[in-house]
Length: 272
Ligand SMILES: C[S@@+](CC[C@H](N)C(=O)[O-])C[C@H]1O[C@@H](n2cnc3c(N)ncnc32)[C@H](O)[C@@H]1O
Image 1: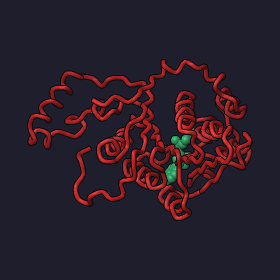
Image 2: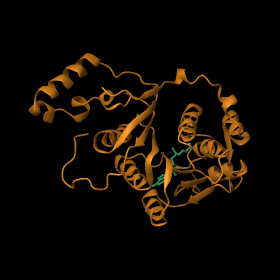
Image 3: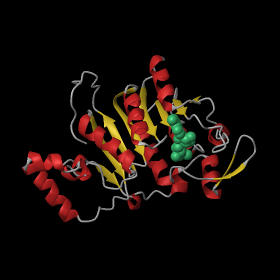
Image 4: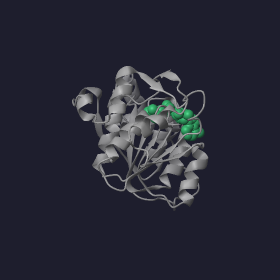
């Protein structure tokens, strides 16, 4: 069984405040409040947690990423972590995509935070749905080292985000998928792990085992012994997440692209 590197919360021993250099990020996370670009005072929500931010920063630094992208800006917390990790490298560029940044949900606060933190020159923001903005970047010839997907979390949106990001990502680059414990997002992760030339590089915990591991083991064994049983079982039972390198319940999964696979056969797929 392939074993990717796994990080559980308890493994993240660096105190958050030590790792953090940006004051805006520190202020927003310690007060739990943000201000919209219209002056609205808002409670922070739906953002990446500090340990997720540090997980992302580790990935960016590991491959010395220069060009990065995120789908889903919200209050700009992931963006602040990403720009912070890029800020020591010359010539960096961070693309942000969100069609609703100036809606009643976010009040432009994400972009404001990122600009207030001094990263305005580094960013390229597209106020469009990702299925329109990502092909636009392909037409512009953008090539990415790192992407973070945290947009609309339906299965089809997440899969489409991955499909379009893959077309921009260089071999060796990393795509991290947030909220990977959500069934719709997890399904996309299983598709990537089973059908595409990517490897699971790292999972962010908590990594709680699902219940009844013995039953799961038995089902998996039965599925392997008979093609019929395998067809009758859901793919998740026939090939458990752990066998694909996906830590059960992990909330962010980082995949590393091994190579471009544009020339795939156009019929059939591996069950996922
Ligand atoms: C969970 S929030 C992102 C939080 C952000 N990553 C952070 O850490 O602060 C999800 C974001 O996805 C955006 N979104 C919704 N539909 C989208 C789409 N079709 N394309 C891109 N972003 C979308 C929402 O407007 C929202 O800002």
